[in-house]
Image 1 (cartoon, one colour):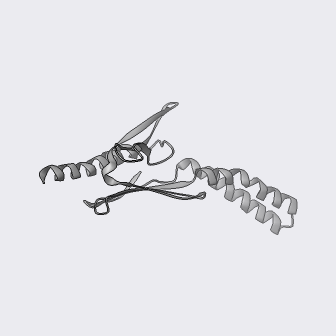
Image 2: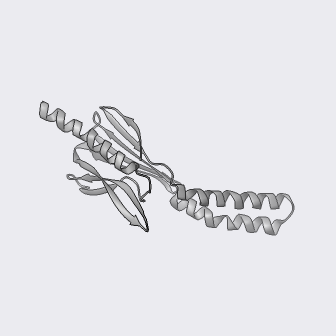
Image 3: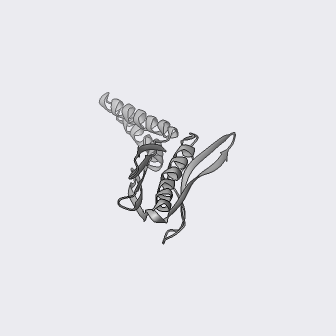
Length: 163
């Protein structure tokens, strides 16, 4: 996840679209373009076939392409996780005080190590682990994001001890 905003009052993170979704997007666009071109050239069967075949990569685009956002705000006392995809929009809010820490969940995939950021809530109705993204990624930004979240949360602990 990429750190979008890091101020004493608010920390905002955003995921990027996985590189693995480039091929389905490209396949969908190629099939649709070939189908439209064939229709304009008078080849109705080829055009309709290509457009129908675009449903295969289109399904993977619909299933896999999503953006995840996380926002931690001290003044509003809120932890907000939003997910945006072609299937719809989802928003979950928790009191910021329920958030204990962030850690990196790792998965060995062949020779590659994939990771994602997971938030641990130690209080409230939704106590437990909450991944910020649904899939593990190859990039090492998860470690940076988890460290930034923990450092940002640590500022709260330091201020409370001083008061």
